[in-house]
Image (tube, rainbow, N blue to C red; front, top):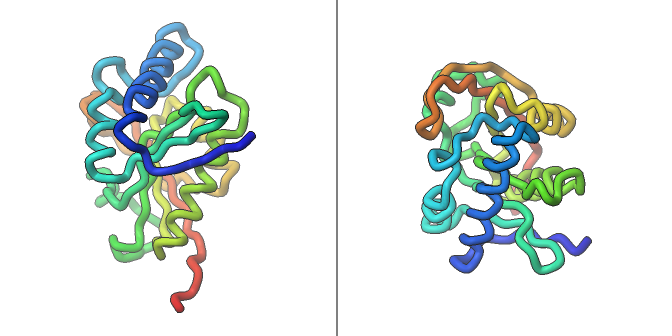
Length: 181
């Protein structure tokens, strides 16, 4: 594998949308459980908005986009009332949103590689507090995050990206950042 994770460019949007649609299709036939809803979230405009903010990343292997994610410092509104174990200034928090790997390539370690990239990216920017969330129903993501050392600190009911009735699992991990030179 020659995996490259990089900032997305406009030419990647079709591929990211295709992955979103593949996940929605897999969920519709019972192969995945994300809690996402086709035509609601995630959709093409999710990727386009992230591209405009310059925080959309893609995972590419063998010349093909096989995964995508959004990495920034934008915390979901319900994060404000959460009982985080690490109290840090907001400018030291990094959040990973909408991690997706094409179902055609599941089980190849791409999710782990993307999470490793996320952690390195946060460290490189001096953001030691890592936060991520997932739907309570997404046991696959919850298992991965647990294996990578993320701690579930709470589950909160919310309307998430226009999806009502979501029980949102909040996770965190604190990493050491390199000392400033």
